[in-house]
Amino acid sequence: MVQVKKTEVRDAILKSAFRLFKTKGYSITTTAQIAAGAKISESNLYIYFGSKFEILFAVCDPWMRERVENLETRVAQEPDRKRRLSIILTVLWQEIPSEDNGFPNNLMQALATTARREGYRPDLLHWIGGRVDKLVLDCLPAPRRKKLNKRGLGHLFMMAQDGFVLNYHLNRKSVCSDATIEAVCDMLLNGD
Image (cartoon, rainbow, N blue to C red; front, side, top):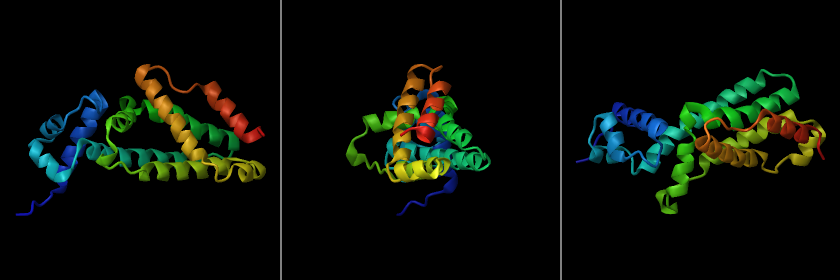
């Protein structure tokens, strides 16, 4: 007999997982703990998700998309190029790495400990990279934009974010400095 999946059970699993990932981290959290937090059996959890890795992506994808969409809204309200670029880098390299108790580190833990066969797909990374590329290029004067177009700035900025996520995980007071953000803004806006 086919199991009927219930939205409220799936939502309970995701809420439990988010709470546990946020407080304990991906590596330490078990599917048994996630199931207990959702008030279901561990075997029932596997009706909804194939692995802890899949659960993390079901939590992480909307979390990251919401932050990028909020960033787009903030940037759209700022007329000054340098200030827009500063907002982008501040969100990517300071705010997101430290948000929700360093929640993005869960993705770093998962990717570092997961085998390729577990189904990692870079869809979210490509989506974010494309959006960040557009945001950054829109801040640049036309000659700089032409020179840097299609060079993967969004992907580069996301890779840098990974470093700041790890740094925050190791030292809760440390993310990218304001001085570094200002220097990168100056290089992108004025550098050759």
